[in-house]
Image 1 (cartoon, helix red, strand yellow):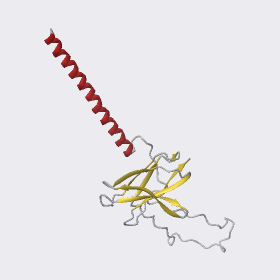
Image 2 (image 1 turned 45 degrees about the horizontal axis):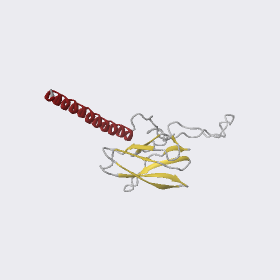
Image 3 (image 1 turned 180 degrees about the vertical axis):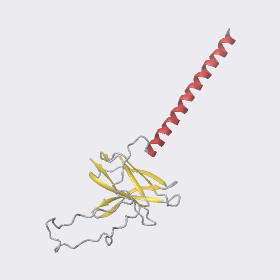
Image 4 (image 1 turned 180 degrees about the horizontal axis):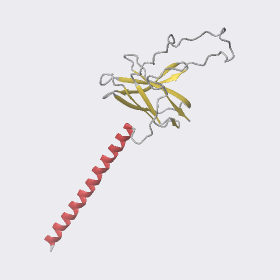
Length: 180
């Protein structure tokens, strides 16, 4: 009976060890997948840029003339000679922020696209500061035309952020995040 009990104990211990190792490996893979999803921004609401869509011109304010002005006092307009402003150039670097509101020192994700950048290009995160731009101690590296990083700031109020390719001088669109 000792031989039967011995192999049964070994089988039970071996099976138990397999279950424990399986749970540990599964847990490590699950944590890695959750971190990858967090970095990629999966499950977070989409945030839109503060710039108008490409190709839309700026609107011009209405004329200050009143509708009671006589034709003699207002110059006639000829539709054939009216010119429209060309559409603004499309941003080469596109930046998104999520969330748009956060508590002080809460993680704020910055993701974007820079499709024309060479692989490995570094972009510098900046915040609008008194008419200029102050650098955050944060950068992101472009891989496959995309980049991702985050900031944590205690600068309370509305923060205007962008990223800058310091080599070419190209800047992204400006995004806004309110810190409370």
